[in-house]
Structure formats: C-alpha cells, structure tokens
Image (cartoon, rainbow, N blue to C red; front, top):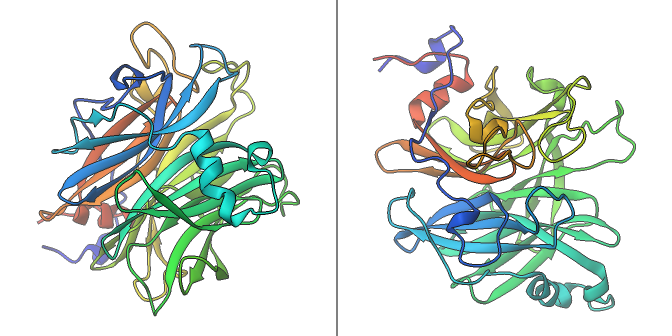
Length: 356
C-alpha cells in the first residue's frame, strides 16, 4: 500500500450509498411517526443500536405535534427492528433533566429534546442530545446501560448543541466536540464553528478550543458543526461533520416557503494526542445531496421531503475489516447509510486517491 500522505490528486468521494436506502423511515415505526432522521448509531453488546429523532404531526405541515427519540436494533446494521415505544418522550426528558434544574419548572422550561448521538465509553452507552429550553438551546450528556433508565450527567449553558463524545479518554480527560451558537458572530449570519471541550468526569466541562471555522471548509459559507462521534484510526481521529452552504436565490424547498441552505457531509482528521489540532480536512464534500431521498424530491413515494438538499451524518462505525459505516439523515425525513474503507476515507481527507 502506498503512503497516503504522498498522494496529491483530489479524488471523488469514496463513499457508496447503500442500495437499501432509506434504511429507516416513518413507515417502519409502530407508533405515530412522520419524520425519522438524524440518528445516533453505535455497536453495543453485540448488536447495532440506533436512537433516532422522530418529529410527528401531519405530513406537509411544519407545525409538528411533538418530537421523541425512538430506539431500534439490528444484527447487520442495515435491517432494523424498531422497538414498540419511544425510548425518551418529552415528559421523560423533563423528568431526566429535573435533577440538574432543581429550581426550574421543567414542564415549562423544556419543550423539545432531540438529535441524539451515541458513544460507547468503558462499556457504557453515552447519549448526547440537544434540548430547546425557554432560555436557549442547550446540549447535554446522559448515560444508560439498558435504554430504559438514563442518568443525566451534564447540561451546557445556552446556546450550544451538536455535542459528540470521543470514545476514550485523551490525556486523562473525556473530550467532546460541540457547536456554540454566538448571537454576535464575527461575520454576521450564522457562522457557527466547531469547538472542543474537556472534562475530568463527563459532568464539568472546560478548556474550550476552536477546532475548525467555517472559513476552513471551501464548500461551506454559512456554518459547520460536529456530525458523527469520531472513530480512532492510525493517522488520527476521523470524524464526519456537517457543512452548510447558503444560496439566497434558492426558493421554495420541501415544506417551507423558502429554504436557502444545502447541508453536506464533510470529513476531518484530528490529532490522536491533541484533537484540538487539525491534521487534515477533506477539500470537497464527503457526501452531497444527489439521490432523491436526499434532495427531498420524492423522498417517499410520490411526496417531497421536509427540507430539500440535506445530508446530516450522525453515526460512524469502524468494522474489524476496515469498512466504515456512516449513518445520516436525509432531507430531514429518513435515515440512510453509506460505506467506504477507512483507508480511502483517510486518503480523501488529504485530497488524495489511494491505490495499491
């Protein structure tokens, strides 16, 4: 195998969409479901496990009745068995957060709990999530052993979200990527970036560092943020991120009168010992909306998806044979899968083509 760092030619994405896409949709859910997307996926206790976001309401109506988190298991990572009820409802989320908000009425304070990400650390499943509160958007970390009982470990101050945990301690600390949302951004509009924070115990977080800015991604002009929790490779921590390109000329897209954004999946490689240091960033999108279930056109038979031109990676699994499974939400409507070999993903980070 040639040294991938010596390659210079920019390559096309090595990712291949799975023929079974979408691998999960509202039709697969045995309770009220409308949009099933932005799932966290991991391998745990011998099975693949998925926790997915479910926005439920009336098809075509942006005023949803609510959001919950669904749970599914799989033996092969492709065919999923959805459990008969959500694993976290809004009321359960309010109960979960009450110990860390003892002086607030969580029934009034918490009104949406969503966008799960899964990381196994020391044999326990850790769930990162976003939560909309009466005082801003927060990110949180919880832990579970059975997806029935959860313990809330920490909640961020507003405004912060898209938290993803590294699967092991680094230099004695737990580490996460996050995306703060500054109101007074340095360049206007969104311009949200990727930051890193450290913790001695998953409860108290500090040592924040800016890792990647919007200006570091040639295919983004609006905002970027964490996507899937990082996987460990011989060259660094590999992580799929989300990148956003805004074009004000875009008109009606999906269910909304105007949707000006396109969400792509990007790819970054971070240093193994100091993940606040960027080793490489893929010079082109890892995946951009092209399939009908990603562009939103006929995302389900004879109907358009919620938001056109959206790909959002949320899960990344490195198999023993070097295959990487990347799970992503498409058109904010369904959940999908794409695959590549880890060596090809590393080469893509360096804008290179890998060959024997």
